Amino acid sequence: LAKTTQPISMDSYEGQEVNITCSHNNIATNDYITWYQQFPSQGPRFIIQGYKTKVTNEVASLFIPADRKSSTLSLPRVSLSDTAVYYCLVGSRYNNNDMRFGAGTRLTVKP
Amino acid sequence: DSGVTQTPKHLITATGQRVTLRCSPRSGDLSVYWYQQSLDQGLQFLIHYYNGEERAKGNILERFSAQQFPDLHSELNLSSLELGDSALYFCASIPRGENEQFFGPGTRLTVL
Image 1 (tube, rainbow over the protein chains, first blue to last red):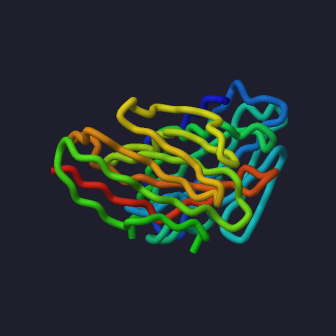
Image 2 (tube, helix red, strand yellow):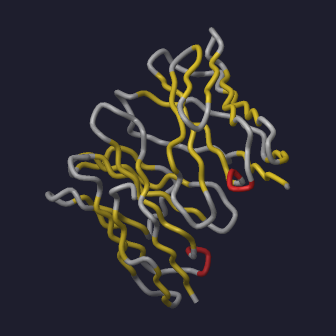
């Protein structure tokens, strides 16, 4: 399973765009990149998943360069309620035996 | 609501005791993953079951064991409990052919 590296923490202010980058140098051909959000004392919640280029949904965008060795989660116009830990996970859809989350990025949104 | 259920929600017990945590995956999901999350720590993968068979082990202690039953629910057994076992325990399930995990609400275990 590809190892991921993320910043430990980030601070932002309400209304700003936040970009969190994840490095995954050993990503395999069949691996997808998935981001999760976790609030205190709750289970992680799926945000977005992508394989290459750009994916956008109602809450975030995911940018993946051509070499796929990194990815960037973009949260537009964050609010205080976006304060959470964000995890990047890399794995195959066809061999998902082993799911290892990294330390995650603790995002704090300030007023 | 993710569709994954976990019981009990809270569990308080003493050192040396044994407890069983239960997880029911989403309807139709064959995979169950167990995770441990200590205070302010990341998620530690413990074990993965698929359709009743163990598929992968992570950082699971020998004092811990798990199984998945024919109805696909899973149990995580923790024995000879120590203070350091106090944590949130999550299970997650994945639809077949996908790798988006749906997490349950967790069981908070407190060992006194």
